[in-house]
Length: 196
Image 1 (cartoon, one colour):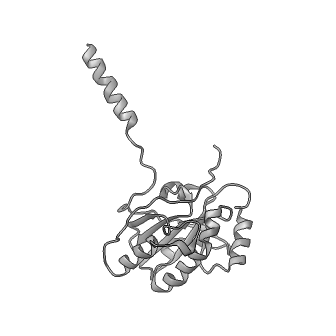
Image 2 (spheres, one colour):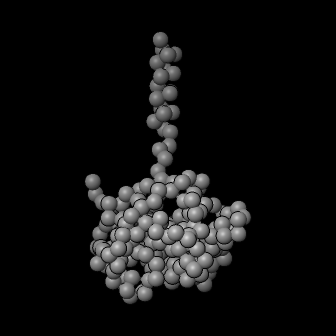
Image 3 (spheres, helix red, strand yellow):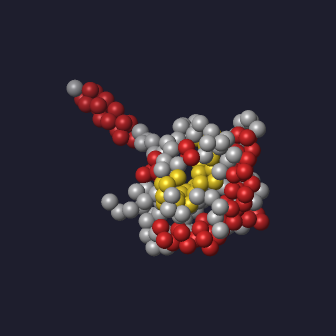
């Protein structure tokens, strides 16, 4: 009886310790979404009929890391959107400085040519498993996750970049090669979640 009880307790502990999957892993198929852009239009990945893939970046207005990466995100859009890999940024943050009106002002100030979408319910950030700003998900044309993580290896200083993870992933996808690094740690501020 004691052995049976011990076995039940051990199995229960192992089950309780089993990790709960939060968000996507490399190789998963991502969910499309329909979110409000700063121009008032609803945008989804399906709108990009000629896309060869997607660079989805969870970002915000207020995080110092997001600010440091802002010009690099603009550069990614300039380099890849015309080649079939549009940049789509999503702000899921709750709180001061990240309201929809703040997003509109930021997009105008920085002359964004890419969508800056509001994830008001935070459902998309949760589905993807985004934790930080910025946090990148490079997707293939069929929405298969090819890369998750940081834009590059120098969060605070563009001059210090030695590894360009997103560029390497997109270049590999575009040429039909294997993505060299599929996952890195997203460095940035934690997403500001709504209090339940």
